[in-house]
Length: 409
Image 1 (cartoon, one colour):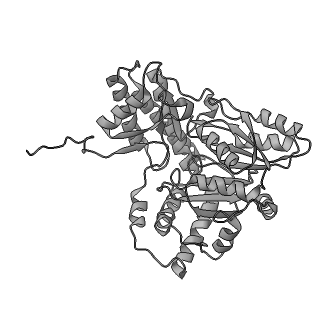
Image 2 (cartoon, helix red, strand yellow; image 1 turned 90 degrees about the vertical axis):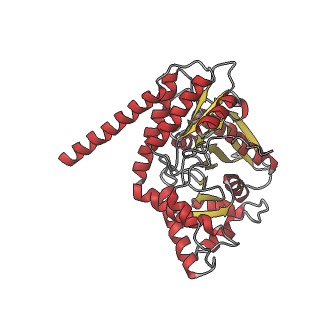
Image 3 (tube, one colour; image 1 turned 90 degrees about the horizontal axis):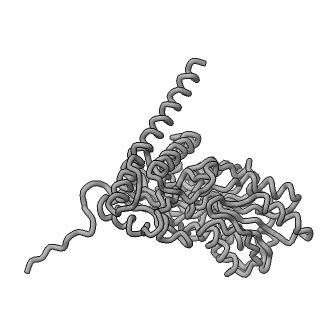
């Protein structure tokens, strides 16, 4: 018998990847990654990689050192800890979300003395609590403070500048280590100006590539700390990486195809202009929140000034299943949304709005969400997509008005 298998999802139209990472890879990068490999110790590779490092400096907004590892963001997180800490060193960390908790558990497995400060998942990190912890640490046992800038599981952004100010107010020498994996390249971030000692990120978020590359920006204080830290390092030794990077090389075989893509995506970000990239993400974040508000659905972030411009975590009403909703939307519309993580599992879905995305892509995804809510019988007020559209129009009108004023001057 000739039986046809019914496809799990329709094959018409494009898939929309609206998870907060990995993000959509732009066609320019896809084509670049399809290029034939080159000698990773040859002149062409060296020139390319040195150019990439220069562009990464512009994106981190730093004039300091940048180390690149073939790894996910977790690799960068481990590399940071093992390069600046010694066994049993004390580090202050914050349970501000699923990914912050993952960094905490990683530090514990590595044998560090992790002191966890509680944080409201809906608000993020409290800088005053940091200052209090450090003021009480008269012997300066804390070697580092580690935080997540933009918590992907909650859609909450914590203020790096306030944390830096708290450390300074306590007159404490602790290093400031920042996970900017879901913010760098999408939201305003200043490694040097903000006084961050180590910033980490990875390729699959604002840098618009598949997973596989991780990056660390470090200042002189962090570099000096790494010279005396005595946690055993092998692959993650940033001195070995930096020595090779100085001449445009890796200390091992690099992910050349991903670097081809990174050459394109870093160029795209700088072509658009970082200030415009940040404004685009702010516009899309505001539109997404306008949609959720119009639907009558709560978001996890409880303080509007801390709402993330790269991801919005939306709660479904009690007795409804967010995972069933996501499955229905994927089945019907080919739109993939992020799952709720940790304590937010099954009660929350996440809409990613970062990377290679524009107004039309977001509106399509929000339309699919609105349809899915109706089909799953989840109580809502229709009009979320329309509210997002109005938000985008208002933002664009404001930009055009500002441009006209600038031209008149």
